[in-house]
Image (cartoon, rainbow, N blue to C red):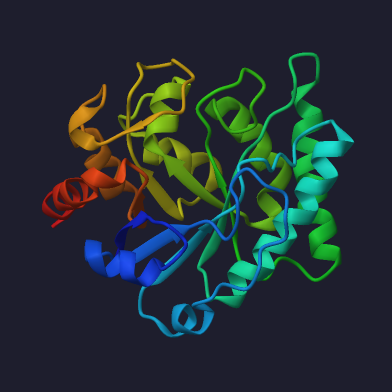
Length: 256
């Protein structure tokens, strides 16, 4: 059964889950804009013992595709650190954005950098939990914005069996139609492990990553429900928190 929940503050994720009647939560283990190794979570034991499922979102600064050594090398390091910390609290997976290269770079170099990440991790015994690559909204040289590029990425890393996170806001803003999108993704990746169910404050193809509550976005939220239904996996909303109750109620009714 697909579990429904929300991205919540990391201070007390279980209390946040209870307040939303959520079956699953996602949160950060540290500063989403920082490079520090995550500390042990103060509720680690309770999180491990809880029936609430957990996903961890890695910091936004991570870009393992980058051709800049000062970004790519620390990105690899902190991704491993967050993977270990996420596994230590029983998380189902670690979400990481697909990243990008600059306009002057060959996108194939970014794809090769992703392959090297998994190749080297496998040589060292592998990651301790699934790494879930998420589609992104902006950037002409992004690795996981347009699905033709996503297919190139999966050709390079698919043998290492990473997971995939489909964000509905990112897809819409990135210029990918939401109708039948789950089937199009599965044709590339073979799987969808998690849906980030979000509406968008901006128009189709805008490239802007600005999430909206279901009743305040620029597209029909019935499309979100259809994506969740077709994906058949756990769902996390990442919408503004004051609308979480209404957004989750909409999904529960639509997916019942």
